[in-house]
Image (cartoon, rainbow, N blue to C red; front, side, top):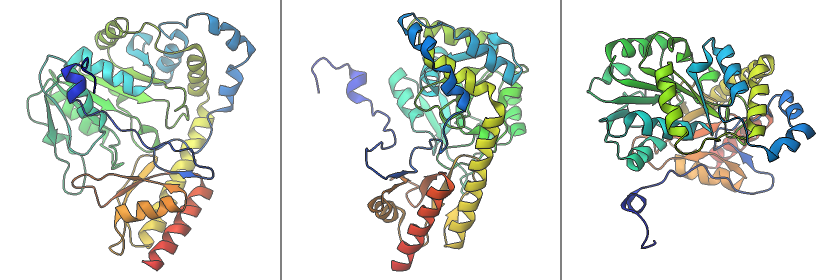
Length: 355
């Protein structure tokens, strides 16, 4: 601890990302990355011409990418904001719309960056408990607040919220900003992007890290009415006018335009997810209904989640264990390739027989 630390730095509890070990032969099912490479079109964009232009600053507005996103979601380009990963976009919206404006509501079991941002920006927060079955019911969000934020599908549970339920919330709370964090929406949910043009109190945040397989590029974006996007741009241009580099802009544009590859990759993940769920249930696991590229599973009574995670690690298989109230009996397991999941299932079955 340095004597120069501010009170905020001294007191904050930073977000802890999923482990990224450098272990040969590791099956990494702990950080919800895509098991498949990005579109082949992405590689074609990173050519000699792109490398030569790295001496030049990138387009500060990521105009080509923003237009591609607007076309994809049938919005105006002024309704699109592009940033350096969805985490940074989330941080900017906390500063733009929540700091100094009142309380923010979010689920008690959810993305653990939300409380970090509340600490960092001095935003008072109130958590709303998930239902006993871990479902997120927006009817429970009746407390007056400046903002409401939740992932859809939720993380780490993987359970989704219906679009009509989101729309009912927007109608009921016209003076409250509703942020729908859609990192995993492409694996079975219905995006709230279709609500953007009709409601001025919704901001939809997505990422290229999961379904578009560009986690290493750090590309995120927000969709909202022009007044909200302008607020994000004011924060961005007061912090870093060039948040997205040239290669990332090119890669993300190519990825969003290759819709056939995108849909095929998502379909493979969903098929593997469903097969893994069925197999684990047959082994005695309780698996929550997932609309994400991961499952949230409770092992049978013969072995605890913490023990099973440690045993899998000994077999070079990483899954995510959360030592937190209400969910310490569960493991979050990313959907990998069929081969990876077959290996996981074989090891799990062997470990349960020896338990």
